[in-house]
Length: 469
Ligand code: ACO
Image (tube, helix red, strand yellow):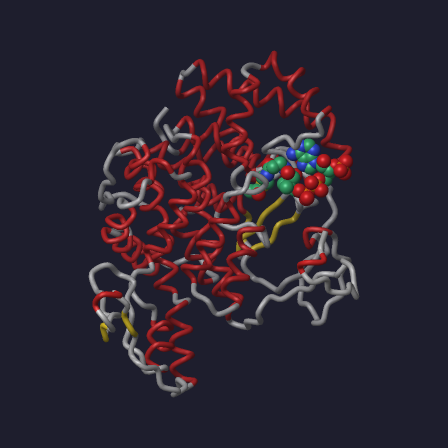
């Protein structure tokens, strides 16, 4: 039961089944070079809008397939590690042995974030939602000035201001002790030269910052899980890869090879997914030439919502509320009567079965059996019954099938992870997609700036306050 080869076999079987089922679906139209400006029909929620060109990944909603940099997701899940996939997303190719070793060393170094942990422990993490703590944590990771900050401060003649608690160099000229007000040094009007701007841009969005965030978001997530459980964060394990170390830093136990392998696949599955809401949020922030820490913070904020990454936690609550397969019929009837969205189903792009759910479903089945837990068996049976109801009524008719969030919670539960940490784990993975897409977009950056159609009133005469009823 502990041979990770079993997990690879499960992925291969899921892939074979998926490929057989989607073989006859038509090819998509959304690949190939664009001529700007482009004409497209845009629906509410920017449905159909084309924001940019990309070589990073493609979601084929008709066939229910997903590729990263030309590689099929199923192959990457079966053959690669999350580290290889992150390198692929960021650099465009699978790494050589040397490149992978270098990346792994960087990640190992960046997993140590003691200052950030010291800062975050000053906040009531146990009372915050984990995604709020994680978002704050990515801001806290940005303790030192990026070169961009230094450039703007140096360019304006001011002294450098570090947000790190150990250096308070900003108060320079006390102005009246009683008032405890301080003045910054005078700014001069020198503009920085363009070469410095370019360097600063490189640093503010540099590959080092991407690695720092990929490693740091995992360490932060583990620390948040521990703090919420009343335990202190622990140091990374020097022998473990990204997925194994994440589990270790969360639980304090070295994971079984099978658990490590499953987590690795989960991270690979969630790493990138087209122009989804959180990726777009991260890119919008980056397009202002803000920096990548703020971009990732924006991605985390967007991912938190129940219509996006937050659905994985909501699914587990739904399944527990339903209680057992026997409760599905009535629960589903009520949900449909109230026109409620059923969490873990539906997708803006997929009108076929989400390929990520195709892998996660069988993994959930395997892990539930392996756990031998009756409560997990009941949860899975409830999920299967709910899937069959939803798909039989809405599958053909509306293209509504399980999405990535439907089975991931059962998988994480079997790995001993609490439901409120499901969405942060999604972020641990997606940070590689966010950073890759930000880097790519910045190569030919143009600030995002769509327009809204004004449908409000015009030409209203102004009424002074005294005359308003
Ligand atoms: N349950 C029931 N009906 C649904 C569901 C659902 N989960 N999803 C879509 N529908 C129906 C809608 O009611 C609508 O029906 P109508 O045409 O009769 O009005 C139709 O399908 C289209 O739905 P929209 O809400 O317009 O689809 P949209 O593309 O805006 O939303 C979304 C996509 C947000 C994912 C939606 O399917 C949903 O809310 N799902 C549940 C939440 C969820 O699982 N989110 C995770 C998505 S994956 C991810 O982000 C990581």
